[in-house]
Length: 449
Image 1 (tube, one colour):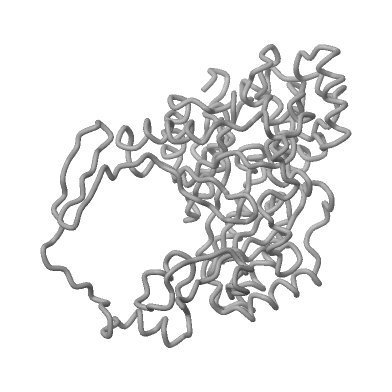
Image 2 (cartoon, rainbow, N blue to C red; image 1 turned 180 degrees about the vertical axis):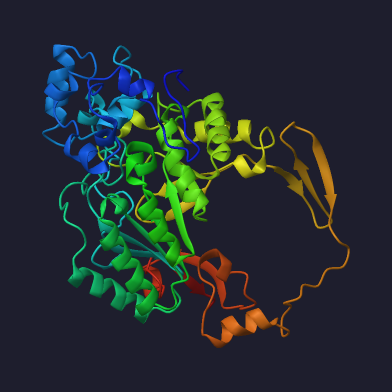
């Protein structure tokens, strides 16, 4: 922390942070700087404005202007103040400023790489997993991240979700009592007003009783920490269980203001998670990632996922190999607390969902032993029990199994192959033999002849 800054007993900064003091906003009063509405009104959104913040060449300015013909650009004064003006490879700059790479499309780029539109069941709502839905309730963000998988959508409709759309989403939730988890996403749902967020939460709690968990996906603690106000968190905690997942990618994003935002949320009893995206030239380094995980857990944020960068348009320059993610995981697992180790996932193109990818710790196995290796490379044999009969063996299900069976729920996908059903022996793509899966039509069981 800079010497010119002190922190009060409440955690609020009494002085000006060093990054503001060196920025073009150095003369802005702190009461305005802390106002998230002021931050939103004064976002940088043009190459000319950017030139006041960072040193850019005429060629870079032309590149930015060309990129803006395809994708929008917007960054808050707070986040822009973290840019190193003299470093073209500054990780803050790479995440926030359009570059030449966005103009180069790969043959494998997909406009909607996760098939969210294809899996839509109500306006803004995607139902891919059995017990949860993703609900985009806002299309605007505080900063338009250059690596965003929804670049096609962000900014197209900045107005908040309307009542008709809210009615349609709630109607779907009421028709699907198996849904117990709703992820409110965007854009950024925290750009809605406190009143509008509360209206959504209240209706979810009143009209969708099967929904037990409400999660928010937001990057405001990173790019607009001023949005996390005492009033917001006091309102959120009335609707527990409420979770917040945020999106720190590099240690440099931790500042007194971002840490204060996390502190307010955690002190309100809101569990915090973090979802990073693996980005070439930004965080594709195991040492940096280890430092990031330490920063997260020190601020009571559970590292949740590291995502492989999606196949969205204009992201080829950000993508790493999958093997880089496995390498990073190898440097985390066993070397730091398990609490601090996220799951590395590939969000499968076409709506296949999150697939965990990790080093192989199973060396070999036979009917009596499993041969494993640890993070040090030590090889060990684990003896299997000589006689094992599970509590849910055929013909004697436990009470939980009976409850699921009585509700008519069936295991789908790979889990369905574990059932003692001689006719359910394989999974085949939808359309083969005319068989379709009830959930989404992508995979269906093959029945024996």
